[in-house]
Length: 276
Length: 114
Image (tube, rainbow over all chains, first blue to last red; front, side, top):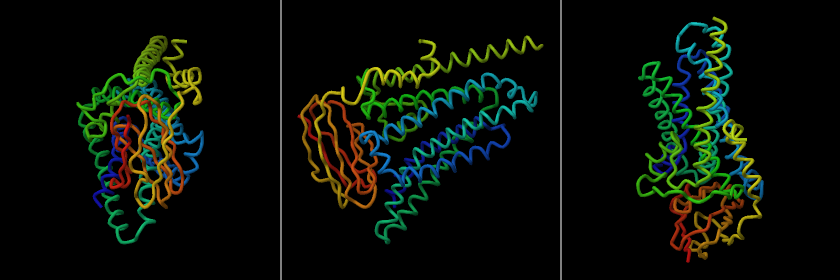
């Protein structure tokens, strides 16, 4: 039972963190629960599908289907997160200024919510497919231990939801203005970390072989598999043995997001000046 | 080009991938076959030469999925029931590298690199 609890918790932990952040980011947006809930549901359904076809998926691309699938969905998440940040740079001030022009912001907000719902869906899909496979294996194996393993799995799931709530309420303690800066930074780091992870999957698939020298090994300091390492891995993309290409992708996303945000932010203020 | 790269880092990464690497251009990998049944690796001790990339072929003969994982090899791969998983490992320094089934940590094995 404890083993099942640990396995399930480890998988849902990352999704829990991400959903918590997304909930905090969308704190003031109406109907956000519908979108985020939809993302979770779609992700869970997709996870079951992926689990059901895991064998077929991994046979694709000369046995590298899983890796390429993971790299692709991480890529989608990176694009969505970056797009959300750029959108917020454009409209964030209106929303932080509260109520002002909120009607327009709400209409546009749905687009940004869709992007974040996709991110949530991807997070649930990635972690969920392993949970589904594991629990399916449990259910099909001998009956006696199955129920206790299922209970362990359920507790693990509940603990993951706890991580999500903890992240959310922790972030919501921050007052609105610094919260906006905090979540922007969090989302950017999240995206950069996911890009580095996508690179790792491409490297494992041997699709990416240039610049694959490991730059440092900080396993002795903080192992990626420890709970702290896992949290940092999700939040800022910490890797104990990053390759040059991973670092490059990481920095590229950080710089790219920064540039795009400045660009769209300044465009917006130009427009505001012209209109005023 | 630089601007495009900043705008679409992932696309840029993909472009670099296509330019620089095809699976066949990688150094010829050493293949290691391991089967997994009744919650055990067979064989559980395998060997490989140092400084050569390695490809694990893990055949899961059990009726449920397993996850081939190793912290030191930096691999983590779900192998569905009754199917085979292919896992690439970069060239390694001599040493002992343990692997296990993440869904059943009693199932363990090790790769000795010389």
